[in-house]
Amino acid sequence: MLRVALTGGIATGKSYCASRLAALGAPVLDADVLARDAVAPGTPGLAAVAARFGGAVLAADGRLNRSALADIVFADPAARADLEAIVHPFVYNRIRQWFDDLGSRDSGPMAAVASVPLLYETRREDEFDQVVVAACSRQQQIERLMARDARSLDEARARLASQWPIEEKARRADYVVDTSGTFDETNRQVEDVWRKLSEESASGVVS
Image 1 (cartoon, rainbow, N blue to C red):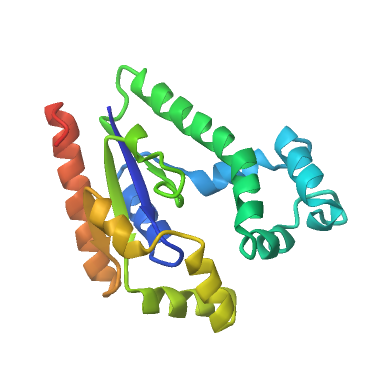
Image 2: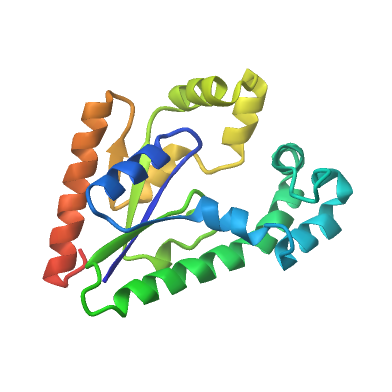
């Protein structure tokens, strides 16, 4: 089975591409959902986060206050690294299990996609057969992020600075979906990429 990673940058349209792939019949797993599972109430992950960052990152009901935690980790690279050390092992273990489970089925899919925002930052690209990057210009990222999350220009720039430049991710990718145009243009690219991945998985030869 072809193990595909879908990645990108903040506000480059990765989630939209994932939804389109799912609509085309691709099995899709969202690493963001797994990251939330890693720090759900009662988990060792949440206990580790509270021990590292203190009670200020917990809401009154004991759940993680994601906004408070984000304000800390996006302003402090060392804090962000500590959070990633807690969350990422759980996430990647679950991704491997998911692929293994799909691959063990007699009538399972020939290709599947894990949507992983920080694939290159965590240096896990070698765990996948192919990498698809959703990309747009940095200015579009800033505009989309500010519109989506009502953040200031400085906050948006700080969020982008916490990730690799999208140009570098696109350079390393096997496939790039340019999301800077219309939805129809993005849809056509996603359909083309999924067709090529499906043909590749059916052939049994990874390019």
